[in-house]
Length: 212
Image (tube, rainbow, N blue to C red; front, top):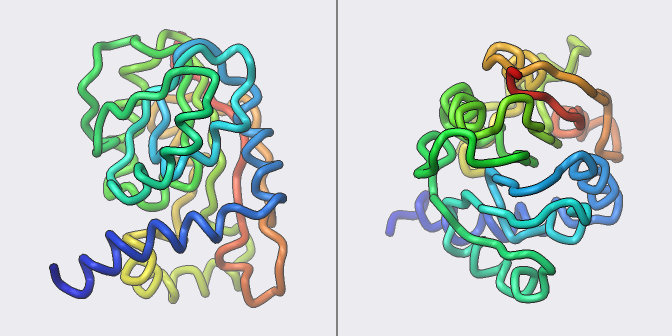
């Protein structure tokens, strides 16, 4: 295993888990998860941090997670989950499930890393029932020119050291381009911290619907 592969496979999942575990992130996760119902597809399951925030209306969750280490770190949360959790794939761009198999879908802090987010969103659209909910919590491109300029400058380093993460993805625009209707959206500096951290702090939380 080369140094880059070792970093991506062994370090990035732990670093991401720690960075996205503070209580204020948990509150954002709860807001994002609130509209989920029925059978849920989650892209980028990670260590299962969203499981504690799923509403009672969720009956089962199928997880797409490329990292074996992240999946292993989720074992305790899966064991105590009140609904079944199944890992169904490694790649959100190609999911082995029939059309309209899910009532809802969830993606948190993952669209930044998926190599082709439009392909992944097309898969989610295929897999959702007509009018199904896609709940999201993501970071991405800031509308503030000075912050966006730094995001573009830092993107190559971010991709190298954060497992392919991009700082410059415009999540609402991606959702609309993929055919989703963005029904609820909160956008702004969702992650607190000093101004120097603003390239990582701009975020989006909300829900979109697949075509009815």
